[in-house]
Amino acid sequence: MNVAKYIDHTALKAETTLSDIKQLCEEAKEYGFYSVCVNSCYAAASKEYLSNSSVLVCCVIGFPLGACTKEAKAYETSDTIINGAKEIDMVINVGALKEKRYDYVLEDIKAVTNAAKGKAIVKVILETCLLTDTEIIKACEICLKANADFVKTSTGFNKAGATIEHVTLMKSVVKDKAKVKAAGGVRDYKTAIAFINAGASRLGCSSSIKIINGETIDGDY
Image (tube, rainbow, N blue to C red; front, side, top):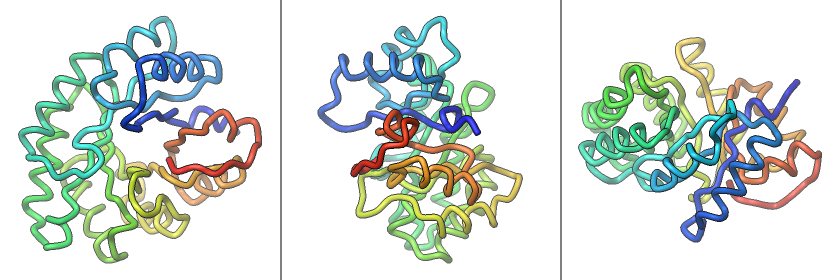
């Protein structure tokens, strides 16, 4: 199994510099990762650094809280795509979901999927560590209704990341109608394989090289 092709090589911390992004892209090209996952201000630079390679640019939207307006998320999506993003990882409005304002959550996601339609795939970050199983199921159902391409576990910036149980649950809901991305807590090769076997088609990792090299590390995203 070529685990590298499952990995979105990630750098999303506030202190990330342009030099860090350049290194991220060079690593992604060297190891053959599927994409680099960066904040939207680095879309254009990432596209430039990844020229003449098959590695895609993935950008996060409404990150990490998901608490901005749907209009802001739609604009950020469109702007990011113009600057080179081929994949979009958006954060849902967790508070609205927990309050059962399901129409609001649907319209929030649709604002992004509509902005990205025909131009980029959309992964929807649920932040599963803040949700009950019932809320995870409902969120997945809403994502399908909004025509999202992926459901994703976590930002990696909250109290916990992905779990095998949550990935399995998400996959049981979306089945073959969408894919699942696990992010946060994917810290070694064995764990990466476990998430893939549980149904993840993509992994968000900041320590991707160590995972590929079989090292065990401590980290967040």
